[in-house]
Amino acid sequence: MPSPNPPMPNNVTQPEHAPMPTVSPQAAAALLESQKRRLVETQHRFRALLIGPSGSMKTSTALLTAPWPIMVYSFDPGGTSGSHLRDRIVSPSNPDAPIWINTQFEQDSPSTPVAFEHFLNDLRYHIASGTFRLFNTLVLDSLTTLFHFRLWQRIEVEAKRSTSFAASDDRPEYKPMKRQLMNVLSDISAIPCNVIAIIHVNPQTRELELPPSARRVIEPYFQERWVLRWLQDPTGQRPTQLALQCRADGTYEAKTQIGALHWNTYEEPNLSALLARAGFVWPNLPPPSRALGLTPAPPPSAEMNPTPPKVGT
Image (cartoon, rainbow, N blue to C red; front, side, top):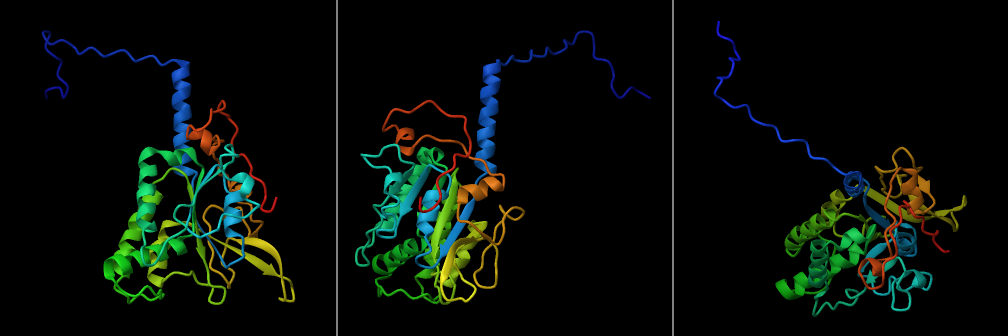
């Protein structure tokens, strides 16, 4: 039987193997650091719905306790104007603050709606330019108002119908809106930082202030659903403690994958502390204005998980 691997003829030259390239220790360290950053970007990030009734401090909790620095798209008029936030927001007199807020979309008119399209263009510009790599968290405040902006535009600009808002799925305006919302949420899911989307909830029905079809579109894009609420005293007469509800309790629907093994049903609303307890890590990035080149940047820091102050400090 012939050999399955007959010898090569003498006149055939064996191929020469290229020598293994040498890698300097500095290049190896840089590659390892790059891989670590990519691991953090792809595995240690979250998408969370932060819901709650009016007065439950959703915006304050997100801005003061989520991993800094934070970029905010503000749609709710005056939602970020509280005095307790002022010294943490980037301004000409406070360029090193950790929170960068875009308020240009807060004022929109049902008769001449433009905010949704302007937001969409701005979002895609920053995705393409890599801006979100300069932030640890993106906050959308709120998806409820953003949906209203899109509804106004669909009715007035495209459908030429009444501007009244009704949470009904049988309106013809909703189908194209749902498709566009899905496209926006897909874009948001691809950015390399954490995302917190704030949504208002009706305190009587305890449901999101969105049409049911919009709820079904939004919820699959967020693995976390946290509820900010005031817990009542034993008599049920008055609220006594602000809590972050992380699991369903028969009143509000809540869920968590991040904290499944680490968090209780009710937790103190300090997002950075909770994330660190669950093993999340995030880099210590420079203030937004420095990262965007508006002021000289300091030397980079190797410190991880810088802790923001608690709400109300």
